[in-house]
Amino acid sequence: MASKKAILNKIQIVLTNHFETPEDAFNFFDKSGDGKLSKSEIVALLKEAEINGFIRGLVSSKLIDGYDKDGDDKIDWKEFKKAISEIAKDVK
Image (cartoon, rainbow, N blue to C red):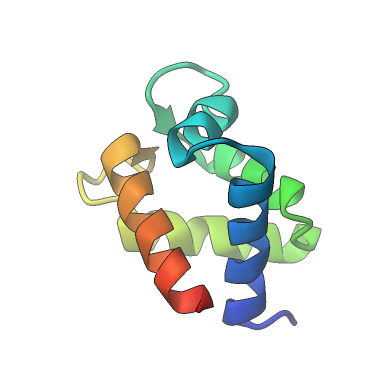
């Protein structure tokens, strides 16, 4: 299984290489346009980051568990920014 650092590194690469800003990435993956990333939208981001299919489900659940502060089982823009800043710190 891929290490946490390897997974975070892949996410960081997708966000920095494919998008001008983290907000562009958020808006791209927010397919429903509701201002929040659902589990399926997070799975799409992880798929883009070439995270293995089995691990995508686990990682998306962990991301929601760790960053969903309002308890709606989704990641809003504020929660996403916090996750991105922590990913950037962990990758270094």
